[in-house]
Amino acid sequence: MRVLIRACCRAAGLLLAGLMLAASGQAAERLKDIASVSGIRNNQLIGYGLAVGLDGTGDQTTQTPFTRQSVVSMLQALGVSVPANQNIQLKNTAAVIVTATLPPFSRPGQAIDVTVSSLGNAKSLRGGTLLMTPLRGADGQVYGMAQGNVIVGGAGASTGGASVQVNQLSAGRIPGGASVERAVPGQLDQEMIQIELARSDFTLMQNTLEAIAQRFGPGVALPVDARFLQVRLPVEAGPRMAFLAQLEQVRINTEVQGPRVVINSRTGSVVMNQLVTLEPCAISHGSLTIRVTKDPQVSQPQPFSRGETAVTTKDSVEIEQPKAALVALPGAASLDEVVRALNLLGANVTDLISILQAMKTAGALKAEIEVI
Image (cartoon, rainbow, N blue to C red; front, side, top):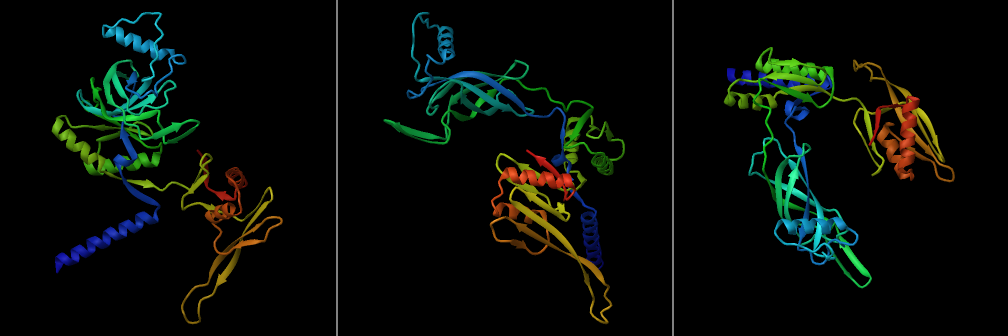
């Protein structure tokens, strides 16, 4: 019976803590979801090579002379001499750029995926084979070697003056097509590591320091600024790995970001969070007029109900457009209803962005606008 009471009390305490956390506008996230270790990141690799075996869809050497130069240099390296004045046609060969991502802690012999993209005017890389291509990093050193059959997801056919194509034919991938030749030095053999938060925030930094101190004790984490902090690691390799695994799972109280509207002008999408609010305003944009009003109302309790009188507001939206019927939206006047009404009335992306920015300038839109 005592065990059951203790379990119920513990569950009630967790529920109360969760309710207090939600009421305070905070959420708990793992440290690995909001931060990263400095120096432990992917590295981009790039290389120039040749794709052969194309079925007459390669580069036209008259327009891409670098393809011919690359083939001549490759043949000379293999012991085949080509006359300088020989005009060779290489319809089955294409010059390509090979790109890859080198993950952290990669070791020689590890296989990584590569992407092969046409550099010249090849019609298709379908059925091609990438010849041995060195992959270099930003420092000019060779970190990988790529070779293999190119997989192209597209398809195409042409006859006479008609042609049809599905997806892209001038780029493809080689799964596991490159092997790592040089390892990138790791950053975990040091006494201290530096952790970078996803955003610069003094409150988030303080919450992170408190959470780490509560889990591992004081003095383990030291702040550098509002975004970087240093964490002291154990000396031995085994405890160091266990420490880092536990450090990733530390829960950090992150404040919910303020109201924000994100507009993608290229795709015409508008995304907003739940904290966006709208004050009463009147908008006239071109031939479109929107009125948002708030009417205060008094809610009176029933007799002898021991209730209290409360003042509420009734929000309404009215949209007017010349030479069109009046459209009224009952209920709460939220920003999503205004955006939905603009879309229904035919407001394009440019009009929507202009209206939202004007509302923000006028102080009616209580949100930050970010255009991407």
